[in-house]
Length: 567
Image (tube, rainbow, N blue to C red; front, side, top):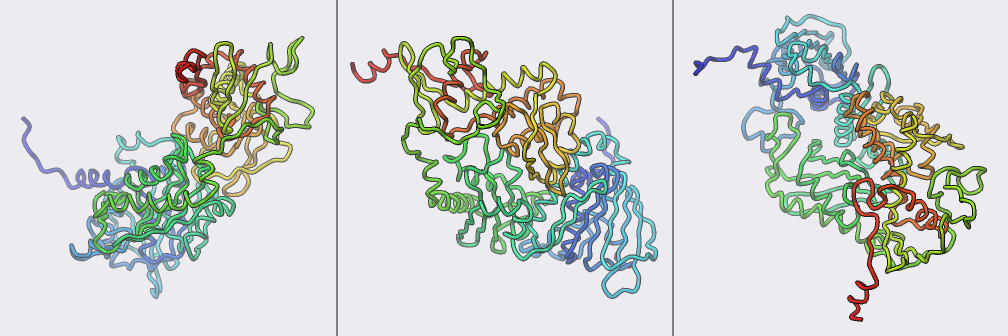
């Protein structure tokens, strides 16, 4: 057995840095939090190559004096706490005194700072944990921290970094979470000299949310309030009609600190349990104000988590408060317990099969064969739509109940696969170009993966900081919510290199497109649309299951029905 030795200070510093500095987003988080703790009103973040080359955070806070610059870069040096009692009610975002020393241990870091009232500023350079002496520097009031060549001296860590666009999306998501938590701070985020976020200081959370999501989505959110002893809740949550495929649009803020907490995420999901399909998630902004001593932030090296004194009570408060809002809205009661109805009248919904809308010159609906009556059916079929969810069809020996979304999803998937097998998904131009609002992170991926998006039928152009113009879209998905489809596609592209898209990932993208482009449960269909869907079913391989493997229909024989009725 090897003898025990004391690790060198350099190795200890690099190991400690690994706990705090996981990736470029970790660096940005620590530096932005320091800026906010310094009283900054505006923070600018400049990132190059996803943060691997340069991260620069500039603020207008109180600054650091020359005599404190060296101390600020040493381990466990902080001005934010002085005793163990301070941890019970820590009000600052940072308090461990590890950020600058950890970052300086695995990068080349330069700090320029000038305190308010000082005639000149100072500069210090830290490379691989080794500090130079501070020297005078011309700098405005505030602080600039520049981090270059992250992990240059820890190649084992550097090789685990992802593509620049993926690393930047992590940065953008983190910066957005801080912006949600601190509406009074202006945020200016730029990547490779392109402005991604430009948020001015605002008075309250509602104004900040509107700035991030746009007024239209903000007005669709419902205000949630509640309290128990030692804890107050304020929240803004979406209608079940406005959901996402992941939890990236769920934000938790505890006393101005953005964190991720499994109990809170589960509580939000539980509140929407009967309102959203499996795999769909609400937009939610949850602000918790616990009393001093009710929460412990000192449970994770990056301060990304917290421990609540009574998580069960907190969970119940969130669930009950959100449900009170959802169940108090008549629109949601209709979704929860739909009225029994049969639809046969003409609807103004978009064509089921994509292509041109009613009144256009062309259509992508399946053509009628010779001798056909136009419905695509060999003989008249009796069917009806119930609850705007299912189609009940009479068959020779009983009835079939068809899930309209699942069947249309399978039809779209097979047709998309056929098109991609012939080269690429066929697209059509938008007569009236529409804008697609994306998050800062989604925007970065969309720009980086334009070629892959074109392969599956989407052509986008940049339009401002947070929007893209939709020029072309898959013809089969005419009438679909393209912002929803694109979010799903972008999410899959984010973690995959371009070469991987040529293999199994491409089929996953097509499944995503088919699911999100298919007619939704709760959509009223015309009789000719139902007839066309049933006709297409007979020509569709694997029509018994949707793109996720769920059944598209259930069969009940006359014998089964008679037995159930005791006949």
